Length: 82
View 1 (tube, helix red, strand yellow):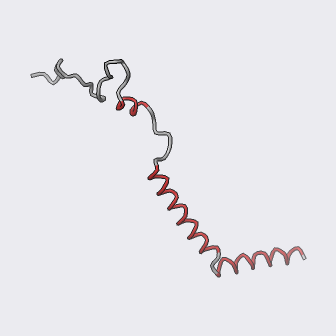
View 2 (spheres, one colour; view 1 turned 180 degrees about the vertical axis):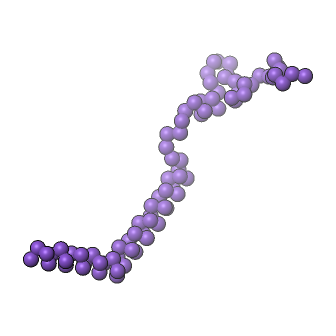
View 3 (cartoon, rainbow, N blue to C red; view 1 turned 60 degrees about the horizontal axis):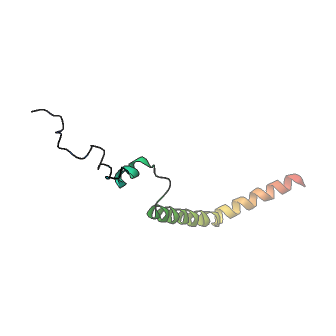
């Protein structure tokens, strides 16, 4: 027996054959076109991640140590100018 595909196979290895009108099948069109962006689920996950990061950043920046550190920095900068 040969490992070659038989001549009765109607579908190529890459997917379904083009329709009788000569147009490529949906599968072939999807394989030829690269993805050009995020899907709705990816947008949702990205949005949630961005909001979570913003919330953490807000808590850090408004925390007492950051505010006092920034205040000391501004005070020292103004003291060198005076």
